[in-house]
Length: 395
Image (cartoon, rainbow, N blue to C red; front, side, top):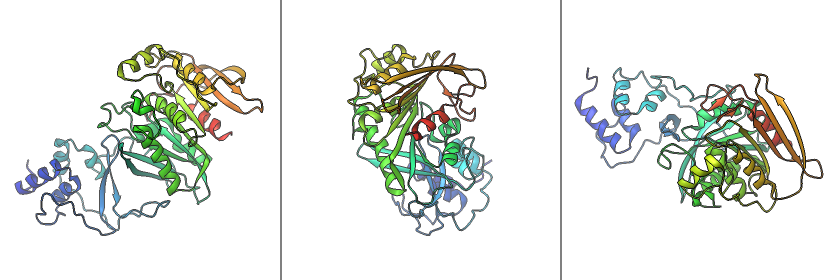
């Protein structure tokens, strides 16, 4: 059944092809002004106007056009739209715009609102520079009141999104409990079809170049907009995100006080796609260059990981150690669900933990102790999120 006049359908289709998705929805909702020129980019400036924003996976959400000042939650719209026409869901589905459909309440997304306190903020933002533009989600705990707090930057793995990664790691819950902000930069399908961070590209391993400049830019933007303790800024990631976290630790030791690498690779383990496949299956052909000075690093890796073999975790630790003599303590244990692990801690002469490595026995390529609400998680393992937070905040 055709629920819309043909003229509205045609107009909405033209606007969609032009990338003007909100205006297309307005036409179908009966809210659009009469025949604006196809090339026009003007939008109303009222404070209660709703804009559609897209995250890393092409997921859409609604936010007020006039955002609240930096550091405050966006002000909600002053009106509630009426119910959508019954055929709008079908139309959006046919156009492949399911996330616009979801944002209008026609279907509740699975992970668009990860677990977190009701009054906390989980905000959608973006950052751009000469290397491109990336969206990111930012979790702000309810305890935020202007006093400088730590910041943790979390880099998702291939095929994941910020919302998925937040749900799987449950990092927002820990941030609320311990009082820190969490940023989740999002890779786009335009930059990598599988939404992997391009850690294997040479430009993806250099300071102020490519994706490192975007992630660092997101970090600095948050540090400008919010009250952040500059001495307690950290970065962690899973798989490709773990490899990217290792790069950020190498390229920006002045920005990140410590890094976490889960099932990832050392900085410089590959220089193109072919060498990345070799490194993932066998480890880096040439041991990655050691850093000039140790970088506090925590590593989690499953000893049955066939996607990124566990020698890569050893290479991350060796790179971070920088050849400095450290005192080593090795312990073993078992998670409440029965997964065994070996934990190796390396401390400096003052007793400060510099390196921490968890080898998970029987684990594959998944976030240890994560929630099944997200992808690539293993709820049976020891809690990697809690261990990383304890490691980061201990110094």
